[in-house]
Length: 258
Image (cartoon, rainbow, N blue to C red; front, top):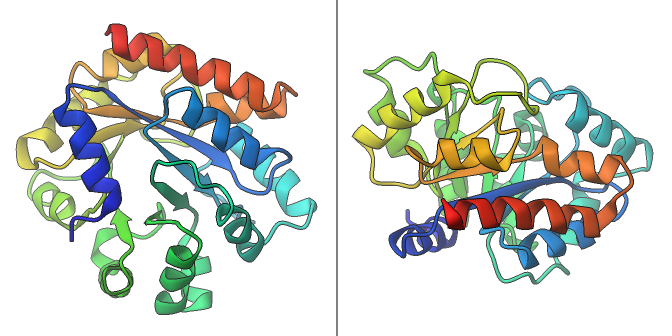
């Protein structure tokens, strides 16, 4: 399926725009205003994190925000309820862990996402080989399943993974958890290049994007970047939606100047 996220990102890419997707922890204080600020500052889509108690892919910044959100009483249902009122004019995805989809049931989980205005889902702990039932249910409900390619994904599996991914291909920049790094890992552009050779879908590098300069470097190969920890850090440090907007605007300006 080619759904609204992929259609939106393709159109912007084909207009020579470098894509910027931001991640914001759902349920964290002021998260809804932060989503609006990110979009106003130039984000092409937003990933909303549904906090989970065992976030194996998340680094310390996002873990801290997720823990605070959970302690404040956040649930998947409350995040989706908040998403219903966003109306920001760009596609929304959720990023969370497979246990939540499995516990709720694939069909119901996907339908609840769509009912909340969320058009895509990223489940980073669900490997391609085990993802068929979820992807089938998601497709039937009209939800795009974004799959993650890792630096360790072998060449013979990469075409299958890219074919299975809808919305965009999430090219994981390095082995390890999310978080800002001082330099862009060489694995980031190497993997994105491999993905670009086997798919025409938008390829975005996420994990380890620590500065606008690194985002520009990543986009020499990739179609765009996913920026998460740097955005969430603005919220944790008390800068709120205004700080998020300023940060995202800096990334947007750098990518546009490219």
